Structure formats: C-alpha cells, structure tokens
Length: 287
Image 1 (cartoon, rainbow, N blue to C red):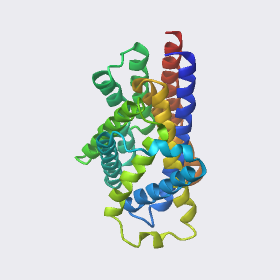
Image 2: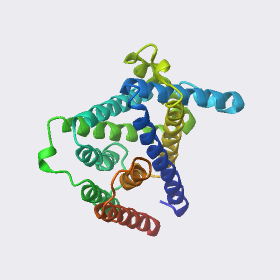
Image 3: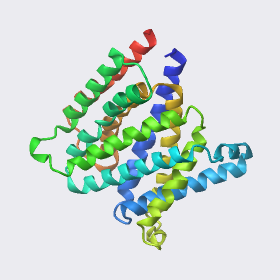
C-alpha cells in the first residue's frame, strides 16, 4: 500500500471508531425505553431521513441510489442485521467481558476471509496486528473460564456475521459509492427493524430520549460511511485490525459518561493494541 492510502485508512477509521463510540452511548441511553428491534428501526429511520435530505440539497447524489447489485446488498444487510441482533441478545445473557472478548475475534475472521475471498496477501505485520489486538483485548476484559456459556456461540456467530458483512462491503466499494452503500443498508434494514417493533414505538421517545435517537441515526450513518471509505482506500485485512482500538476508546467513554471504572489493565491492553497497529502501519509504509 502507498503512504497516502495508509493515511486515508487511518483518517477514515478514526472517524469510524469515534462514530461507533457515539453509537454505543446512544444505544445505552435508549435501551430503557425501546426494544432492540425498535432501536435498530430508529437508527435506520433517522439515517434515511438525513440521506434523502442530502439528495434534495445535492441532486448529483441521486445517481448513487441506482439499484445495482441488489442481491449482494440484500445478503450483506441481512447478515449485518442478524449479527447485530444476536450481539444485542448476547449482551443480556453474558457478562460484558465475555461478549467483548469474543466479539473481537471478528478482525481475525476478516483477515482469513480476505485471503480466501478477496485474494489479499498475508504479511507478517497483518498477522502481528491481529495477534496483538486480540491479546490486548484479553488483557483489558480478562474473561474467566466460568463465564463461558452456550450463549457465547451467539457472539461468535455475530463476529463471523460482521466479518462477512465487512468482506462484502469491501467488494461493493469496487463499483459502488459509499453514499449508495449506506443508503441501501438503511433502506433494507428499516423494514427488518419495523417487523419486530411496536407500531407506535415512536411515541415512546420523549424529550429525554430525543437527543439519543437523533445521535444514533447520525452516528450509525457516519460510522458506516467512514468504514466504507476506509475499505475503498485499503485492504480489508489492513483496515479491520484498527477496530481493536474501539475497546480502550469505549472504556474511556464509559468512564467519562457513565462513571465506569478504569484500571491499569485497560492502559496496558490499550498499549499492546496500539503497538500492534503502529507496527503494521510502519511495515505497510516501508513495503
């Protein structure tokens, strides 16, 4: 990869990580009032409203909405919705430590699928960043063996689903714009969310929940827009290991907004994750 491509990946993934953190805060604030289906419906509804508004202001964006590769889009978005729902259910059944540790098997799945499906090359740096990333996650969450239950397979299934979703995203970026990819994602997932929602669920959103409802749509939109552009700039096996940095970032967000405890293991794990990312970026730049 060229240096300017690496720079774009770092920039877009930074935006994605910040957006996913804002998304997590918004979901937690809405969880008491809405079900998982309803939260996902709100995300898609607000995102679609923003995207359609942009099409009115900027007519040139309408060309991105042409229905192309609909079969691949439908498969991608169905897998993503199922993975997100499985992850949310697992959160109610398992300790957070177990869920986060298992969820971060996803970059390893992506690295494997990128070689098998996309024909990307395996490099020492890409192997190291996956190993150090997962090691850093284990240092931070330190899940005990007693916490592993059959429901853990829900998280493993969700992680594999997210990996498939990201590999298909990488394939779509070869021919489709990030705007079009994000639009069809929300257009297809809105009916999925509505299918399990109370018909009057919007009435549950009061003045207290309104900022979070707006934020979840904006953050969901910017997260996937940034992710699609990161995939456009670089290989999937290079892009996704940056996602390991989401865990220490979320830990800091939890400390700032919800008073959750930070300990020395958080900083040690974050240092391991960042060292792996730095090693890989330096190796790709040299190559």
